[in-house]
Image 1 (cartoon, rainbow, N blue to C red):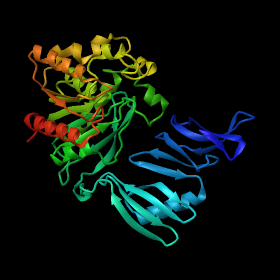
Image 2: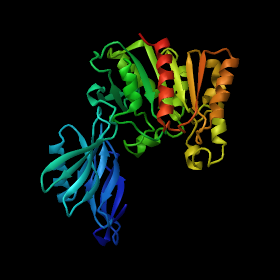
Image 3: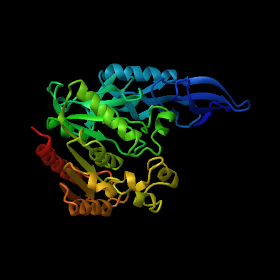
Image 4: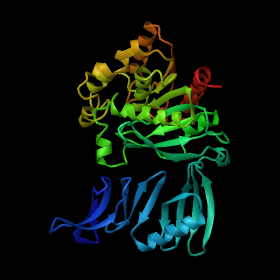
Length: 397
């Protein structure tokens, strides 16, 4: 990551005894680790924080349910404690600062609050709200999100985030299993517009960090390589089954949904486990695996990334929704952006045409803008309205 104080020492990231990635101080001449600076037994270090000259490590960021910090520098540790006392119930980060003047621009957030900017004057001990990041979102009307531990069929822990509708009893709820993209990414408990919208419509939202997700050690991530339609898909199903078993969600009213890789997982969910999912939603989904693997690298990921696609010992056609439409016997909603440069709309259009040619129950929504990540308000509104109508028809009350 960088030098630390002297030319003889370097800050490195390495595997800990618990299998996660931690931060250590290395003596360069000897090549030996001389100090563990920070390690967490369950999650990786997300970022290493240096001072502005990058001559000294200040602290690290890591994520359990929400992003958090551990500061090695005593002054920064004291400042962080003071900020947390001033903003109880929130996670706080520093977005800008003037150390000499003792003024800091803070960003405070949690699972219900998208984020509010504050100016903190340490010398005057004053905290002034500057502006909320989403002024039209009333945090008191938002749903809570909590981290749950799910045990997969082989005993592995699958961290899963559950968002429950406000004031709803966690019993026999209709549910949406929302699978993150990547697949080498992760979900956490931070405010999420998609989850909050669906929760406001009465659905429980499950977001499992299946094997292949970031943040839980190199081995956990690597377990998802070449497991499209395999172990990653099984983890999603196992997480869903646990919440059925404990009575939280109604086994007859569950839809699986996602964007990008999540869209792929949604279609494979209705293909592989139609007894579990009553419908599926794909947004800019990876639905044609052979085509993606053979695409130009500039079109879809690096050569290394594409080498981890697919399922070990299976043909690409055998785990490609486009090639498996005969096995789709649940209603599906396909949405795609015209200006998606990562997963081009033609893939979703061809998938829809193939579904219709086989007489499948499918709907298609073309989104005018927003790109791969639905970056515009208009694209998100179109997506959510379409999904609201679709869910109400198939799993709503």
